[in-house]
Length: 294
Image (tube, rainbow, N blue to C red; front, side, top):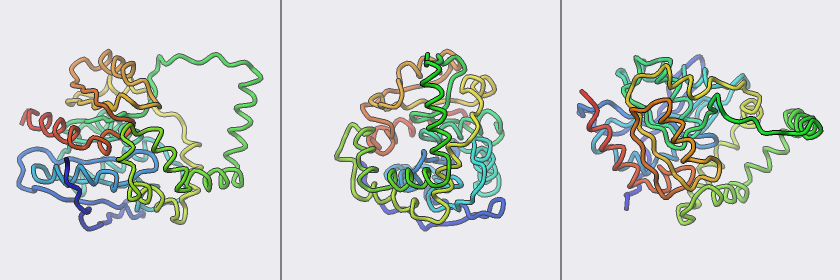
């Protein structure tokens, strides 16, 4: 069982006039590339607590809060993959100081993929854990004109200030957070009060509701297969195959189709395998990074 240690001291980096929160721990003398851990939607550096506690003995480990999340600033602006790509690439260049292995979960995985594809000089490798992002050949569901119009109306309504605020108040309730976690974690014992608090706390920050609305207005980014076509670095996929939000076997096949040289493993976990089965994730990540070419 992986030991759980408290996170290192909170540190901040000024980026484009905004305070970006990050944590850093580990073996600075390691000859292996540093690790940069990137959380998913609604999460933060806290979600990597179990991984940092273990991996810091062997690697120089960094974790960062994307702009709009965690303890980072939450300005009212446009949020998209390009923004987070630039944030991550600049952080590696300015703070870490050498190419890193980026490991991202969900939304953080898509942002890390964009760095590896479009800022390759900053990526020594890429680890995706149940990564988000569309493929260009994803089938378009057949929807009747009436349902499509109704769906568009509801979406437009929910993006208005008052309905969006009301929806945010509902989804940020601890009871709702706990219910959502129970849907996406196979091991319910991993859903602790600390985990719920870690997700709830940033939702109380000024600007959090505006970020919530802005993310849903974000333009769709490049397809995953397009990004894979631009990428050349080593790729490791770690799937929690019990994820109810995605068909991991089907997505894994698509990744292999467009990037045959990848390595992948399927784990008995849900959407957040790094937190649910950290020991397995840490061991697989450690083994893979250690065999990367110097």
